[in-house]
Structure formats: C-alpha cells, structure tokens
Image (cartoon, rainbow, N blue to C red):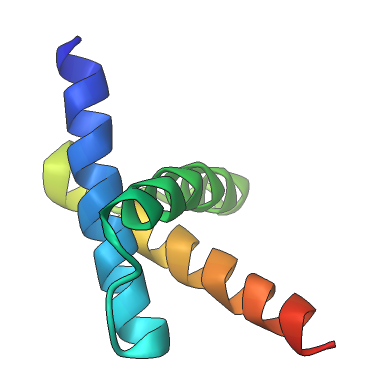
Length: 82
C-alpha cells in the first residue's frame, strides 16, 4: 500500500513538472499522475538501456519520471501535430 502511495505522489509531481516544462502549466491532478507514472516507466526503461541511474530514493525517482514524462508529452505533441 505504501508503494502505491509513493508511486502516486512521484507520478503527480513528475507529471506536474513535465506539464510546466512542456506547456507552461499543469495538466490537472489526474492527468499529472497518469503522465508521471507512464513517464516513470519510460524514464526507467531509457536509463536502463544506457546503464545509468539518477540515484535512489524519492528525488532520483522524481527526476527519472519527469524526464520520461517530458519525452512522453513531446511524443504526444508530435503525433498530434501530424
């Protein structure tokens, strides 16, 4: 149960940060969480491919998820513009 709560918190923070970076505003709490959680998966996968790690703990998780969420929002933006 604690892991789920941490995932939701990390996802919310990462999604909000990615929304601020890409659009200049948040996306709403539910979309922030969804984008952040998916971004965490993307970021973890990408950093795993390169054999790097941004550190353990909450800060490393938020940074990894934020980078993944920014990539996700960028890809979605590219697909929408075509």
